[in-house]
Image (cartoon, rainbow, N blue to C red; front, side, top):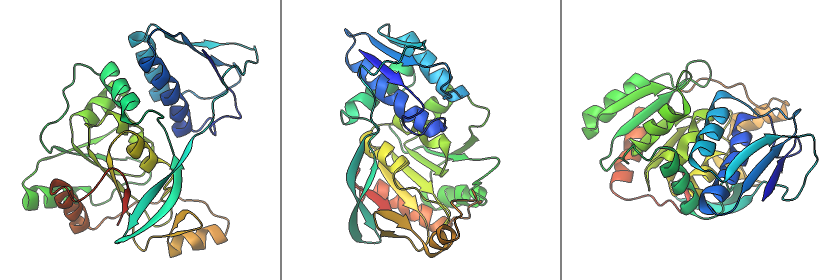
Length: 288
């Protein structure tokens, strides 16, 4: 099977969209080990980042039936298509349906196989360890220390805090796999969601200016994770998550500023407590 990657596919060179494509291709390879999977990339296509390059290397090393080649040949034997799905969103007790990316096509099977293929030596967390992945430059979770303190004092859970800017793919993947609860601002570091344990809880902290419901909620949903988006004054309009502030920016033609985030510590504690009490399902996205 040949899969062609061109500039018209997936919104390249955006890092997240590159991972959409390679997760899809890797899913097919790991679930069909007797079939050759060749990804053909035209030389002018820009898609690489350190994370993407290391993901490709890991899959190629683990799956002898997967390879990536550069070629000027225009092949559309199996042109990839961005997949969308409709999932329910629970917003402050009400349920609405909206579109999001469907990163994996085989339910949880493909995501789990990729995780266990790339990091088979790293056991899944069987206890509710909490990992907090902050950012160093934009969308910084400003009160991460206060959130960590509240979790440790009120829930008795230890919190491991880290940054991914200088971490390899394997370091990021192992961090996710070793923590059942992940707290993080919205950002590319959430591309490692599939490596988290089965049924893990992903708490995505968003600023009112930007909360793309179609990005990482779909990654969690298609890989069997509970996904909670924390954002103030949130609602769904025309299939999009909006707040008064985001609507104001959009009306001015401003998409996003990547503003830093301050999150109410009690809201995070409440979400974790609810997750530990089995109050949330992976079959819907929880917006609070």
